[in-house]
Image 1 (tube, helix red, strand yellow):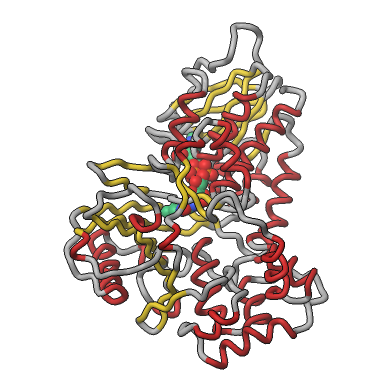
Image 2 (image 1 turned 120 degrees about the vertical axis):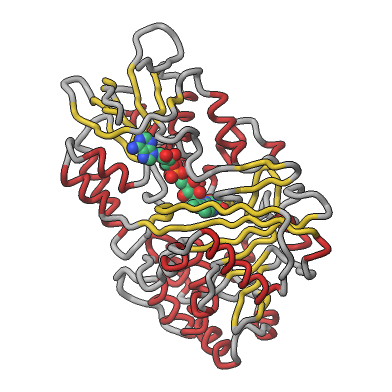
Amino acid sequence: MEISGKSNGKHQQVVIIGGGISGLAAAYKLHESDANLKVAVLEAAPRCGGVISSVRQDQLLFEEGPDSILTQKPWALSLIKRLGLNEHIIETERENRRTYVAWNGKLHALPDGFVMLAPTNFVSFFRSTLFSPLGKLRMALETLLPRKEDDAEESLAGFVRRRFGNEALERIAQPMIGGIYTADPEKLSLNATMPRFLDLEKQNGSVIAGLMKSDRKTSGARYSLFISLDQGLGLLVDTIIAKLNPGTIKTNTPVSAIKKSSSGFEVETKDGEIIHTDAVIVATPSFQASKMLHGLDDQLAQRLAQIEYAPSAILNLAYKKTDVPSFKGFGFVVPSKERSSIIACTFVSQKYAKRAPEDTVMLRVFMGGALAKDVYALSDTELIKSARKELKKYLHLDAEPVELKLTRYPNSMPQYHLGHMALIADIQQLSARYTGLAFAGNYMQGPGIPDCICTGETAAESILGSSIG
Ligand SMILES: Cc1cc2nc3c(=O)[nH]c(=O)nc-3n(C[C@H](O)[C@H](O)[C@H](O)COP(=O)(O)OP(=O)(O)OC[C@H]3O[C@@H](n4cnc5c(N)ncnc54)[C@H](O)[C@@H]3O)c2cc1C
């Protein structure tokens, strides 16, 4: 297999395995450097992008995977700007910036100023219909509780129960944070996912007090909390691919093994082809990385196999506007206590402009996760039927959709369980024994796109900084 490079001089070679956003970010970082490397991205599927997939159908834009980028983490925005995609950035629609929480079969607005699990606007908080009077009192008590003195790792559930009480856990933290990670809050490590809340407690004695203090310091952010791209997040993938040297991407090329050779590594594809390379960046899900590494390092392979993944599904639905009862907001999340088949529902066409024509409403329903593997196991027909039943219950929406698209991801969401950071440190320590071997992916520092990009770029930098770069 030919590996493409910038000139015909002597090149060092780098193979990147996996063409999701983590692998592509690594490839682009190497491309931006002046190291004159020959790079190949080996992707198992017929297309790159991994779970990122934007499908245009007539005037509808379906995001089959992720649809938003968090702007508080800098790496995605920085890449978007370096790729020259500035003018394609779209912000969320200001007048619809409201989220609801389903509770007892009804939707309740999230109080203004609520930051994931803590209130900062007490007027709005005390008026909220989401919590009972006792629940509100318990949450407000957080400002008076002593801080935790030891550094023992805590689950999301343990932390929220201790500081804010059970209502805050069941009605807010589980659907908001557990929902993002599609995780069981009893197992989700707060240190590995939202260390900011631990820091706020440590530094201010109270999360609420810390948030209110940092709120006063924040001077007008440049973008809304979430952004997207006007043509969908697939534009990010397409633009990276277009900028890489021709021939860099090799699709339909699953890798089966990585072995050490006298001068570097041998990468073996499922077709039996052997590629000799100086360096390898493994940018696949960890369970796939584990399978490739058994011949190289059993201990490393075992550690990678320890990370669990949960399934998820996205159901995109388009309706005639006249068929959809009025709803002002971005959508709603559903706590697991509701025993619903859906985790969340977004009014896509109210969150971002130009996703659908004026006379159409686009909804996006998120299903599955670690707490609802039984839901994911349903057939397509049953899954769609159960999602539509929930839309009827919460939105009184009973009409037939004009378009509908279900996309399933059997092993998509890495679970950041207690002990995750120690496990990742272990993986990094074990892999450091091999010069020219680096890892990237959504199991390392967070599942969000900005973190994936950061891991890809860090892996590329580690190769550039090693003797091969
Ligand atoms: C439904 C859903 C919604 C999401 N929503 C958001 C969101 O709105 N915002 C956000 O920031 N994040 C979101 N995420 C998370 C985020 O999109 C992902 O974590 C991220 O895109 C993962 O990128 P990746 O490159 O690490 O992995 P992947 O996208 O999984 O890519 C890995 C690639 O490796 C390839 N591969 C696997 N095995 C091999 C092999 N043996 N040989 C060669 N190639 C192989 C795969 O085919 C795949 O293309 C969402 C995730 C899902 C599933």
